[in-house]
Length: 111
Image (tube, rainbow, N blue to C red; front, side):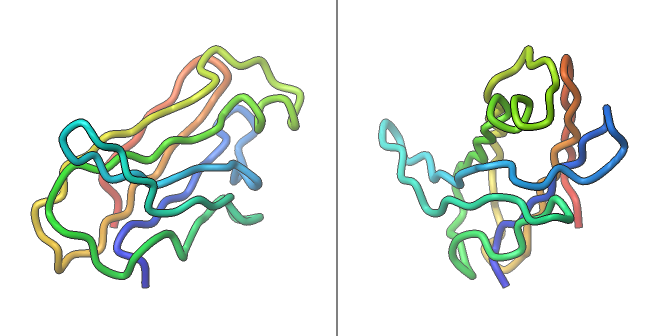
């Protein structure tokens, strides 16, 4: 299983957000290394994103909200959402969900 997974929920429509393109990045000082790119499935999930193990450090998930909003006919105030997080334990699985609406978003450390 991937060390980092995500899912996106469209809270405006009350359903999973399928087809959201995203990428996983490792932030290494001034360098940004793209580890993986994917799109959410029909259930709004990306189950296989990047490596099975990631070293402690700073990572970012970047979601292409503009394309999803356009495809679903929604307004889009935040065309891109970048979630930056720090991983301290390489042995753990990290799940980072995104709850999305046209004028807001939220996230949390999932399980």
